[in-house]
Image 1 (tube, rainbow, N blue to C red):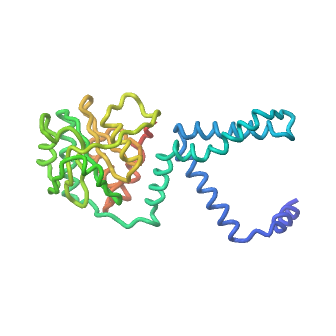
Image 2: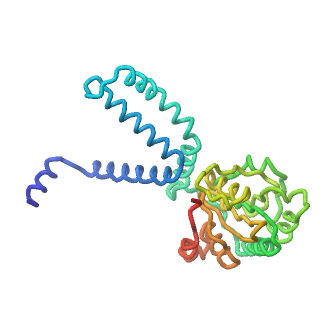
Image 3: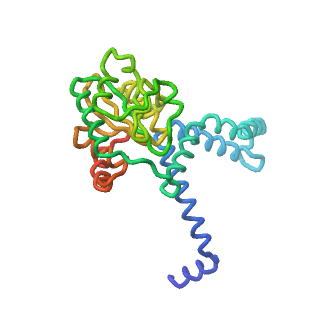
Amino acid sequence: MIHSVVNQVSALNIDWRDLVDIVIMTILIYQLGLLLRGTRALQTLLGVLLVLLAYGMTAPERFLYMRTVHRVLGHVLFYAPFAIIILFQTTIRRALARLGRTSLLRLGYAEMTDRMLDEIVQAAVTLAARPTGALIVIEREQALPDQIDSGIQLDASISYDLLMNVFTPGSPMHDGAVIIGEGRVKAASCFLPVTTNPQLSHEYGSRHRAAVGLTEEYDSVVIVISEERGTIRGAVDGVLSGPLDRSSLRTFLRSHLGGRDAAHAGAATAASRTHAA
């Protein structure tokens, strides 16, 4: 039996290009499934597949041939690609951005120094203890010019005092996010895109939804402090972490911003991450 199977495989004349083709298609289908999982796009895709099935079942050569239904479904399928592009524009943009962030295409970004991390972590812990709501965005490869332009540009050194002054209740810059990049505080009071993910729990307010929304489209790392619960969470790639304390927050930042502790931190952080659903 094994000999016959080997002969059949040999008859297919598969070379290394075919194997590479199969592997690439498997990876693409798997990544597409991860991208669509738990989203409205998956439901829409299932609807399109049902229309395709109905179109095939009502064809002239089929038992369920229905002339009018078949013709109407044909017109629907003709315009379906244009509708899919419009409906899935956010998903497509997110997929292309994720492709651009693969390790093979990374151009690198400036790592955060220990001093910078200490200043950010200390500010976040202090704000959570008060509690005071805050959003701190840290850029990686992708810059955020549109978000920076929406706020007040600063170009200041990263410091505990500056972050505390920005997020002091009643401060002109308190409402909005601080954006950090290239080792500097670039802007404050910035507006972020809010996620439309229906799977995100209703317990999360506008700050958490803005953190998830930004990281769905950009590769930034976001720290969000809840004003109601006094908790600290991190967001990256559209995923919110569990509640973080001083130590786990530093671990979370190191695991996503690089540095000498990144390898150890990545393993420790994975246990605390929970999907936005």
